[in-house]
Image 1 (cartoon, one colour):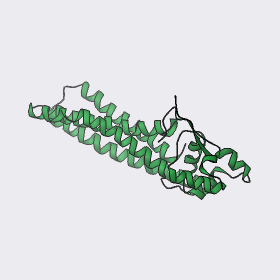
Image 2 (spheres, one colour):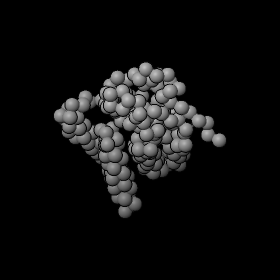
Image 3 (cartoon, helix red, strand yellow):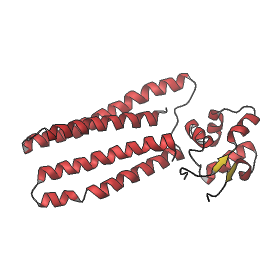
Image 4 (cartoon, helix red, strand yellow):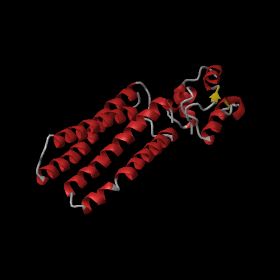
Length: 141
Length: 74
């Protein structure tokens, strides 16, 4: 498994865990709007921090391992770029389908629910993005 | 872009062995792709761009048709 695939696996797992934990916490409610907003922001920040740390933690040992085996750290090539494009397109389709719900909820006065649907949109889109990458790396692009 | 069921096949593996048992890494270095991509091409999981296909054929001194073949799906 190469470093990009490994990073995608770990990012996928991290996203599922963080957004899944947030979803479970939300369903265990009721929670106040302030509390929900706090956890929501914390969840987004936590996801960004965890995925960044994970990317570094994965890349460094892989780079050392590759160097020890006499392999250079390979830059992304046409296949990597194509997989990234196709995965982003899949994620964009998810955003297109889900995001239009947000303004309606906001206009209906359900601001917290609108924020959560926006988060759900981003979360699902990211999961689809990394899930697609894994699929294309494993079974072909 | 390859899709499941694509009938693009290639002789890269055979050509590597007939060219001094060239490794996948050697080929990857010579055509500017990663070893993982060479593996994916050999296994039919990825169809290279026309430019990469020409580079591969040139490494082996073969024409494109002698390296890649395409059979339209019925």
